[in-house]
Length: 176
Length: 434
Image 1 (cartoon, each protein chain N blue to C red):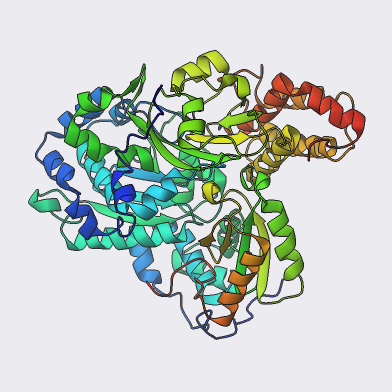
Image 2 (cartoon, one colour; image 1 turned 180 degrees about the vertical axis):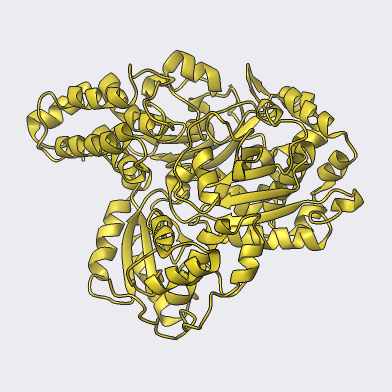
């Protein structure tokens, strides 16, 4: 696995800086420090674009755990990406309401459109809890409902051009 | 007969004020936190008594009476926690996302009322990881409420202290199961715990803990304001009050509808949902989320009554999702998609579920793709019987949690209603509908 590759600094993310932003404050929220494990993994993913081995080692250091314990938890949850992915993560639902409202066709279209594009990763996901807006996709965890293939592509391009501001790689808003 | 309408209680603010329903200003201008003020002047036991009188049952899926769940907390053991289940991931359920995004203050008020009633000083809201906007709105709302003295130290000058922590999940359906959620909140794999002990005795950090669903807690301000008897006057039998039904699939107006319990599926689909979209009549519907067994177009006049649907028809109202399918929909294709979901989301702790969900997916895949064998449906039922012996509803289980048995619901439904269609897949070598 390629790990430790810094994200390209730019408008879509924060350049890699030492330390996990807000780590002490996050840990202090909880009666027991281990509860901060998931928020800290989100924080390193926000910082680095995905959860690197170094990031997991930092989390382990903060919490007094072994890197293996952190990996064991990290690998259980689908939102933590342990491989580099595009700056834009497009998640397309194909669950049972989107299934009969164009979800699979939307997924096929976007997969083909961005097959060789390093900026955009397209993934199939389970129900996103927006079934009244089927078919549904998220771009960096922002909802976009009642999609057509053309409209979905237009939205991805709007994020790429800066017309729309994406959330971070773990879905945090950078403009609260 | 006049068309059925919504009874908007917990969806009133967000429907009346779509432009700013999530702000503290709008909440306060429409009566927000007045129920908390009233509750803080009550005896905590009297609040629990009102909830008992209201007949409120958990809105997450199991439908367990809320006041009874609260009553299991042992006296005098501290600290004790309230954990809010906002890990909404049951396929086609989308009510809690709406409530947290569009009326987070109503939820916070409900959390504060429950916490005060239970003697809890720290509450955790476990928000599904994918709900980025919901987590943003809730964090802002918690900060606003704290700054206004509505939570935090000395809540509204009462001397009562309450801290609320917003915690994001990271993509795991199983964490909606309350003991898996607690494991996850402790920073571990989200794997269910064997009960007993129940969370009320040994929950978060092995301390007494109540886990309640978002919609359940969001209902508390209305119950405190109107009184338990007012709430209990709505509904049918042991299904009191209103519930939000998430209607989706092939209907003209999919959406969340807050209904007095006891209306029928037909009223929900036709009067509120604008009727079936595409060729009718209704071919099948999945009530209660993916975990329930199915109904067909012959069952549209069945009432939305939590106990009756289980006793008479073997299905659940569960999370309140209702998915509707027209004559063009292929039940095998839908069952396969559900099987893929359960196989992906099985946490792997119990062998019958870990192995069985994978086999169900594989066998359904070959049926749907023209490779089915004549006895495949019986094979599926046999696999299902290993997870849920007897294949009954409510189900028995060889697993710690209900995820495994839930994966069996679709194949039992195929056998019950669509055996001929499964056989046609096998004989014709492919799906004839899609």
